[in-house]
Image (cartoon, rainbow, N blue to C red; front, side, top):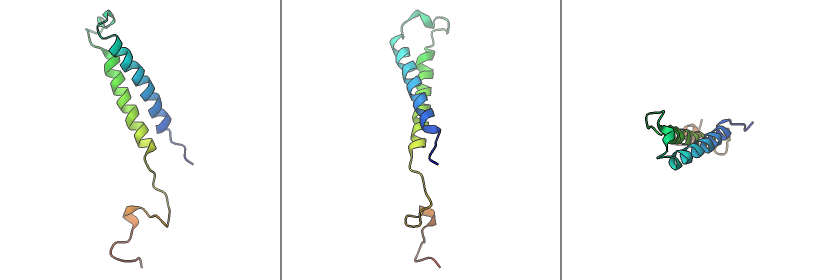
Length: 84
């Protein structure tokens, strides 16, 4: 079964992190950051969520090894001749 939760989860974090980062960039010099001592939390956490989503999406989309006798995994290939 090819269900992998990392791909939709990665897309979710990519979208939410991107929206938060753009909002943080647009409101850089706003007074809404006075409560957080001038720290732009939207930009910071948006970038962290975007990077996490990118990693999850990339790991979920990587090539998966399958049990295939015609194309064995690299560590299952015979070294120095045929198999006994």
